[in-house]
Image (cartoon, rainbow over all chains, first blue to last red; front, side, top):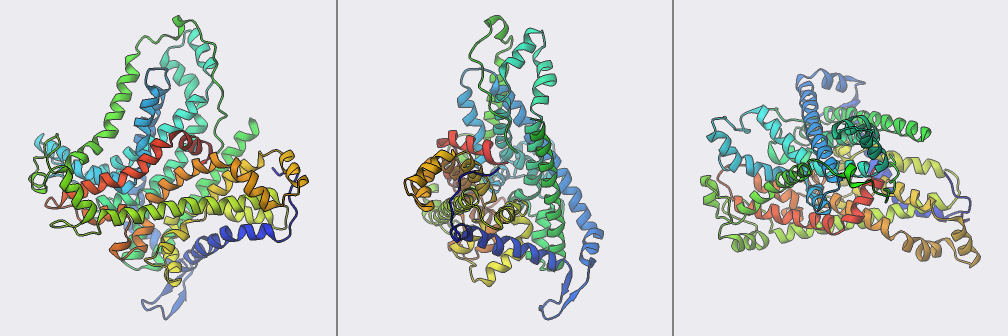
Length: 294
Length: 298
């Protein structure tokens, strides 16, 4: 899409683009290129000798059992977060979309967690579920469930998933609600005149019409669960106990910043980048198709 | 992804016989439950921030507020240090977070508006190439290129400065996309009229385009303010002196390894203070925020 009427100037458009392009080149393309470059080389610890080693870093990363278990952890974690956040977001949105009193108030009271930093969410959940200090953690132990996420890896993973999902429900709620509100009321009303019950209306009409929103949320939530939950992991478990909550992005950080394994960390970064590119491509293909048929 | 077009709901209503829900208390129940689940972690933190540390450490914190609210918050705000935790006072960290959020939000808005103006209102060689160059950065979240970006910032001597904290995050493909889409809806007649009146491109930008973009800017500001305030991995790497720390980083530093015997009263007071600004912005500017988020973050 282009404008018909434009301004004429030789230099001005380039000047206008300079700030954006400068930042993009210096802080996006150059580092991304560096990551790709470093993933193909090996450096001695003092940076004196550099050796080009093709895919050795990748081979090392992909055959490393710690990396593979981190992939597994990340997938379990992301799936849990997405199921919890999207499921409750959809449920709440459907409820808030029905014409009831005070729906405006409910909306505000349900969307504010969007504004919360993941690490702040982690602090709140730590305080609730701390095994000896937290009200809920103590209650669990008093009820005979041995709750200590500092020792039990499964419990630690569950806790970071709960805290992340809790923070993310508001986002899903907002999008599902907007999606629901864009469905013409006539359609659902016609169905109820035809005798469809509430559940049937939802399954046969509303949910299919929501599918663009749902698909969009699947992709964004997946990217969010992969990357933006770093703060939750770092504040709550630091990847532990052991490596039970070491997600992929946390591993990039630990290997690169703490263990100073630049080659391995860069190779992991490149793999993650490829993942994001693939996901974004899928998303855009899908949009194109949708726009085409509209 | 463009959101499904918002279809105006029909004003004509069906007879109440059809519209009436047989079980109208179910939505209230579910929504109220949701509100409680969302609010309870904050409530617990609020309670924790009003008790003295030994009550919390003993593990018998009641579910009602204690007496220590004023002194706890005063200590967190002005001193920051307790018996075990040691950070900068909350007011310092809050100020850092605030500067970071405002600079990121306004910087992203100005930079992306200028580039969108160039792409939408001019014809010039390599126009679409530049547009795609900006666009493709959507696929490079800071988290995946964190270490080389950190190296660049170190080489530029921007560690522990507000420059290092903000400038690398200023590029915004989302902003450029939003403004470009919006600019393309501006009628050609308006541009023609401005040209007839002898207005140059920058005059047009300041006097016509800016006032027309206020709503888009407000919507974007809310989203970007929250984004800036909540940054984590980047400030964690860039700030090494405690005077530069943002409040979100400060909280994690205070938590440390999360032992039972720590200054929970201070940590919780800091947590409550940390979530007030972004939550306030979202709640107060709710209308713009939802519009901006749903219409654009795709």
